Image 1 (cartoon, rainbow, N blue to C red):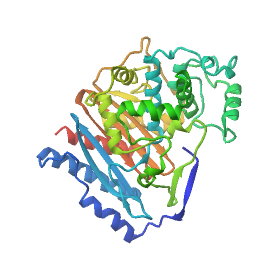
Image 2: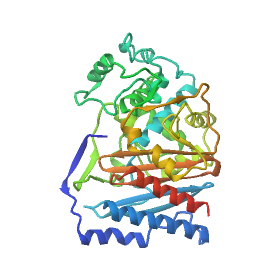
Image 3: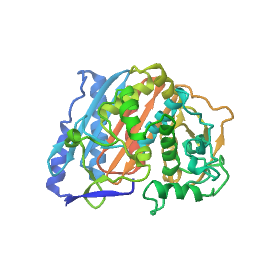
Image 4: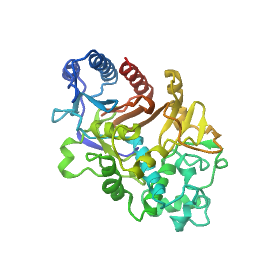
Length: 397
């Protein structure tokens, strides 16, 4: 998430270029299954308004919106995936998901538990004997999954660059506070969780994700490593300096923030989660279990990867739950004595960012609705939440 590779050309934001980006806003690609109905027109107007505001405010080159309503998919695409090649965004453009990838790591782990390959109550050392006797080795997997191991940091230190230095870091790590008392959002925490889940199934994480989990979800255009045949569809991200960038490899990057996907595949993922897309029974239960409520931190209920709120929910509550303090600071929690999957009356969401991309996914199982917003520039989470809230409210009309 923090390491980037820069394209050779600088992005030059000029009046001429802004005009070229703004042009698609007035004639955005119509939804694949569009109907000339009042509801569709209302939805399109809402998305157009949000896209225009975000792109103009933050100089975002390109955006893809995917919305599902009772199994009907709508796609709205704006601007450019690659400025140098003047390549427009489509629902098949690949974007970096950032931390939305954590929900797929959680799905893989939940699938492994459904298969009887692991228990979330198991200790880390069962799957990584090299850590036997260390504090982290004695930690339960569920603590890693829910960021409650005792203060693992947001990122690895700079000197953790490979498997050996990763093991050394974990061997010497000591909690900042007692396990199970604070939520400290952490890539090394949930990244290790995903890594160990793959080991429990006798496979490497990238192979298991691409050859088993993603195919079972029907996500044929989602990748850990983008194949050469799909590189043309892989958008460039653009950082605050205007450089064209993509994420560099890092320790446990795939598990924590390394997946690339399209708005079409992410709509399919949402539909699998809300029950309007068919998946095998084991996967269906695995997805349901990712929405188990382990604890509350303010209005947020922590699931596996996903963050959840009782629905109906106010915009202010969502903004509080997705505020920077929830990412950067240790937060008090109230544990659930008997964690279980929540009812369908919830707003489920996850934000994700890399140096050149910003993503947001939200869905409401009870209403069989959801959306994904993908952009090839990172911008504040609050504005993603506001846009999604306005669009999903429009979808109710």
